[in-house]
Amino acid sequence: MWFTGFIFFLITYLESYLWLIPYFRNNIVNDLTIQWKSYGSMVGSWNMLIYGCGIYLMDKISGTQTYSYSKTGFAIYFLGLFNLMFNWGHHIYTVPTHGYIKHVSYLVSMTELLLLGRIIFLWRRQMKQNKKHIHQPGFRFYAAADFWIFLTLVLAIAMSIPAINVYTHGTHITVAHTMGATIGINTFLLLAVVFDQLNPLIRKIKNFHRYLLPGFRICNISLFIFWISLIVAGIMKAWWQVHRPEVPFSTMMISLRPYFMMFMITGVTLTAGMWMMLLPVVKQYFMHGMHAKKRMELLYKKRNASLSTY
Image 1 (cartoon, rainbow, N blue to C red):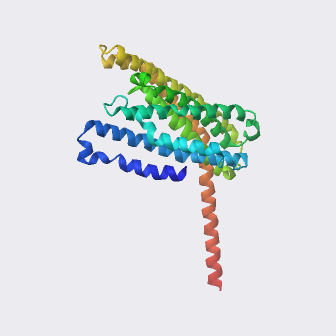
Image 2 (cartoon, rainbow, N blue to C red):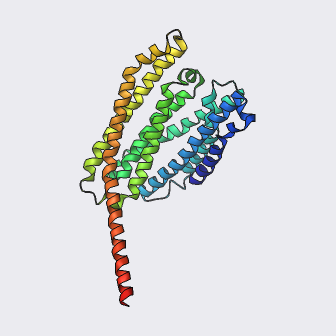
Image 3 (cartoon, rainbow, N blue to C red):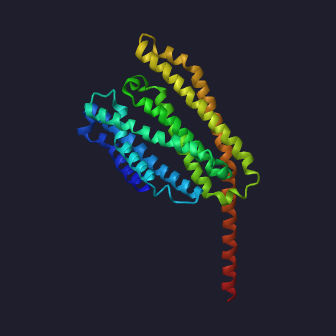
């Protein structure tokens, strides 16, 4: 997953600059298609990198390597690779490009149902084992990421249906999908890996769970309200752009102000919750670095003193 994500990230990053070539830039349909394709696949590449970290951590917590070498693990890898290369097409339903691109992308988007069903099955089975690993900070983030994978996939599958995509495209529902995936899945998985790697330092922090648990709850509650406010704002904008085009854009945006206020407030509380968890770890990390630097300086001085004596 790491190697695949790395290679495709470089390819899609270069592809996103094809607009610099007049052949692509001068055709607006081709340019839009390639831009959506490159950035959609770039996100898929980044996901491969992070999901590789997630599977690594799952095996590390369980103390086995059965999941990484299982048929299910490789099935998820190839499904992720397939989606990386073709799932971007649901972004261009409204672009007048070739029909087969849209049909293939729709079928690929629906394959996520397989992953969704697998996640539900694993989630129910993991509930019986949660108490065994709940003391590990990384496990909490993994459990939260699993919950957000479920919510994000439900929304992504709905957005991939052309009849619904006509309404949701260009609204805050797309932003909600991105924020759920970026913060709820990717950020929590990265935090799980970081906290696992820094576990020796975390053990030195007194009463660390006093900071972790409140911050963790504030983050998830804030993110859920943050997510819902965007979806509601998106639904109202979708209804306006399809059914009430005679209403001025400014009037519609003013009606969304309460949801934007909620979006802003929960964004602040989400950031506060993150810092409640991260600040003790960051502080301990820099203190450890300062102590290590002082130890190195002392060793260097002793070494120089012994050499000069000799």
